[in-house]
Length: 136
Image 1 (cartoon, rainbow, N blue to C red):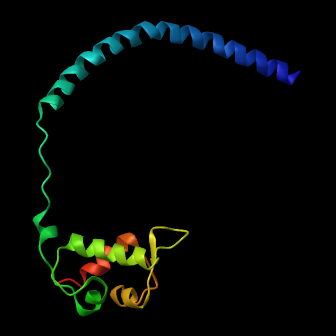
Image 2 (cartoon, helix red, strand yellow; image 1 turned 90 degrees about the horizontal axis):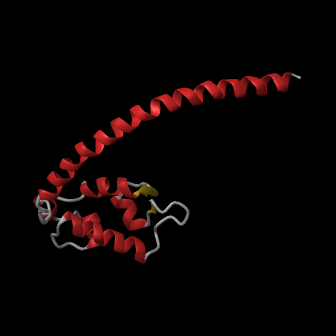
Image 3 (cartoon, rainbow, N blue to C red; image 1 turned 180 degrees about the vertical axis):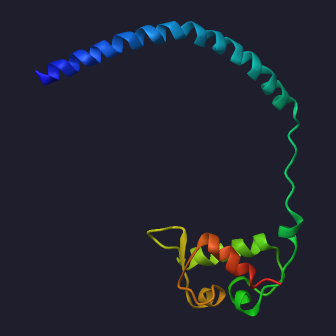
C-alpha cells in the first residue's frame, strides 16, 4: 500500500514538471538561435590568425658540459639538455631499467644511482631535475 502511494506521488510530481518544461522550451529556442550568431565571428577571427612555426627555446639548445658521473652514462662531450635526456633514455631502454609495472619509474643501476643521488627508483619527471644538477 505504501508503494502505491509513492507511485502516485511520483506520477503527480512528473505531470506539473512536464508542463513547466513545455512552457520553458520556446524561451530556450530563442536563446539558442542567438548563440550561433555570436560564435560565428569568433571562428572567423581564429581562422585569420597565421600559423607561426614553433622555434626551439635557446636555453634548451645551449651546449652543457656533463659532470664526471653523468659523463659515464651520456659521454663527456658538451651537448644540449635535450640531447642529454635522449641519451639517458637510450641508456635506460638499452639496459631495460624502466619499471615493468609502472612505466613512469626508472630502476637505477650503479651508474644511474650516482646520477640520481643514491636513489634506487626515480620517476621520469624527477629524473630531469636530478640530471640538471649534473650539467654545467
